Image (tube, protein in one colour):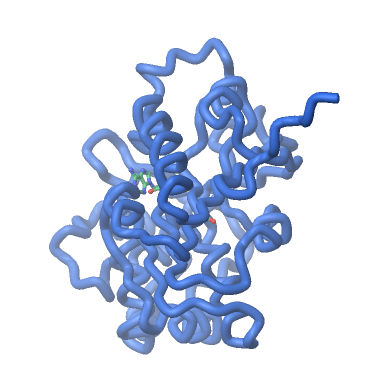
Length: 278
Ligand SMILES: C[S@@+](CC[C@H](N)C(=O)[O-])C[C@H]1O[C@@H](n2cnc3c(N)ncnc32)[C@H](O)[C@@H]1O
């Protein structure tokens, strides 16, 4: 799945910070779930241990899609077989109402639109309707059965929920680990934070998340967060252990803004010790 903010490029740095052993692994802003899929593959090879995994997102289509791939992957593959890379079909499918569909139909629709829309972006209008135009590709792979079957294996026994991130984090206990990858905070320092709410995730949500990360530290839940490196995020996570990573972003609706961007990784455990006075 192509997803804005996909973590594939940042993955090695993120994986270094994920503990080898945890009770529950949670990813409440799952998006493309690149980090979970890597961690689950390592678990399979015996390189990591967790007993339970929770994935969540506020995007209902995405949640339906992951549930369908987990539970009925062959049906998803069959449903995708009906789709073609064709502009007329694209707009017809885009116009369908997903709320009346089964998870399999809804998931297949999302995968089809994701593979054929402009830039592989998932963007909805104020009414929650997907509104990205048709994309130009030479031969897009609409269905990739081996990849879907592999994803299905890795998702087996995973709890997949349609929830706000806080419903997931509130249930975590000492010894659990959570990776938090919220919609990016605005990069411009002059942006109007109250009006700006990418994915409906505004300044209040960024603050709520920073507070939650500190609360998790107090109860012994290790939380790793990634966000854009901005004045705002630096101030939200002040005093916590962090590192900056330069990444190349491939998906950005504003093409002038593509290219390199600094990303901040924040860890809520092993906090930096105050420098001893000489
Ligand atoms: C930056 S993306 C995650 C990218 C993902 N980690 C990846 O590797 O592709 C942020 C995700 O958070 C979801 N989201 C936005 N607000 C949310 C909320 N309040 N609670 C949970 N998920 C939310 C969006 O639907 C989106 O999928």
